[in-house]
Length: 555
Image (cartoon, rainbow, N blue to C red):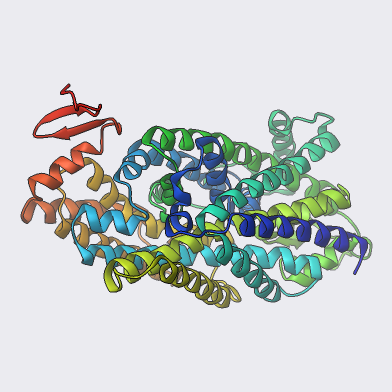
């Protein structure tokens, strides 16, 4: 094992030790700790945990690579994922927190007084989280595979073992504080390389101010090579796909069960709003850095690697070729590697750039540790969501309502372990790149849950028949379109990752039409819905708003 690998492995093992120590120290002893951390996490730290939960392997590993490969056409990932948090923070998170349940399926089941809706919600939650989890395990495989110069599938197996251990121990309480540590590690690991690259290329340590000039230089190189300019719009996709993908990611963000449940871990509606505000700040640091990362990576590849003799390529080329994520071939036989002869996977850009730019062993190791932190942080949140859907929404709420805390915790941990193994097996041969797999999860979340959650909070006439029909139609439409698009059938140029542009409106219309055609909810339920819109100290009852003081003075 060379020095570079030893440094990277050492840094990753040190962070693993930190995560497992936190998980053991904060081990959940009650179901409320296991599922919602006893609703006692301060907004600042919860915002940081949301940031880590959100900034998955797709964000850390895949997004800069996507922007580097696609240029302008990769921007919907940044705009969609960030914009969706505004929907979630203002339209859903505080109201769902006030309702006081553990999970999204539990809210749906209790809001519509329907066990059928609860089960559909639990199944959809598992499908969404499972799909997302495959992307995280694929990301861990990329990191571990590069470190040990082994195939990515072998790295996935090692990642599965690590995630299964630490996620099973701590529950939501342990995962929350682990995610705080993971956020700090991943954001430092993401920002330091672009600061050094900015210094190396421009002499300025502020990449957010300098990468615009680098993009101009890339455009000049593109013109010289006869390529479509880097930021020319719609060169890699259609305008309809651009809009559909951004729409899908925005509404999918607002409906992701593993993100929504993070807002259940705070004390009040106000704390939920502040959690969202802090999360936007913490997420923004990475998302504002991704285009800079992409620009500097592409510029260094085009100027320092392309144009080199094939027999003088740096050592990192062979190492990345061994992972299957990089291909170089002298197709014209001139002995010189041209830009057109380099095939780069989106999933290797962030991991490989510190080596390409000769940033040193410490930075290479730090990026590896950050990538693992990103994959592990989101995987932990996803596993808790799958566990709660199975152990709480189905096992406890439907099958064994008399189950003790001990049995419920055991069921939750078993669900986490089995879900990790199953997702790991599918991640051995992932059906797409990381960002693509994750985009499917967003499409399913938006198409299945967003209209039901939005109308469930803001429209008192919404009933259980509308919710059930909407979720079934939305889920089937999303999955159906993804499968058809993967096999070559598309509408208006919209690919598989933009499926939400069709399923969300169909779900919304179905909810409204079916609800209006069937019996209205009871007066009690309608007042309950209106009550969600007011702060905790206010209650809506019998057409009046009451200020909840000791004597319930009418306001």
